[in-house]
Image (cartoon, rainbow, N blue to C red; front, side, top):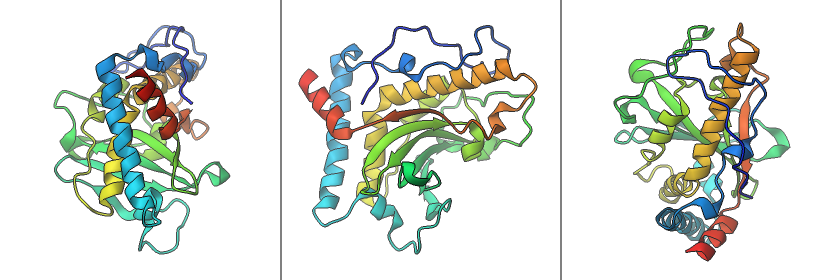
Length: 264
């Protein structure tokens, strides 16, 4: 469930200052941005394997008492309503400035998905949002700036089935170039027990386990936006409701852990 085609040259992503870029307007293929496991060095594979084992262990301790990751964040939240955030008011770590919530709006494609973020206080000091002068909607700025990292799609049994990146309007984020968001990934940590210690640790482990492929999703995301900017220079593509998900990657934690175990 991990794509391995890395042969094609990626389409350039938007620059931090919003400068126009040369290149084709055709949408790029996600597979061109994703590494094969064999391309990862041994220390990286071992680190991913440790994260995968932690993710499976979080699931194990919940399953022993008939629980799962999604059930943990929905517990005591009342009726599950499409588009509402769960838990209410999101989950936020005041020390790391990491944040997440769970919700649903994609019909039968999934039960719902987690959106993960990093807020301004946890970002590297030298990052800056993409300077898009044609924005038709205000973007969060200053201390309110927030970057979406990745979304994790879940099935009805509380198991992860995919990762995806989104357009700006989906999460109402500030838009940071992919390379800056990649630098934020390692800062995502929810280091407290609400609403669930295993669920919080599981989310952090998932971002570590899939780090190389999340990086690919983010670079591909920028390439998709860049292609749209070239083909529709007079539109605010960041608010284009026809472009919601920029790239989706099916996942299986068990399969990835098994593949990493074979290579280490």
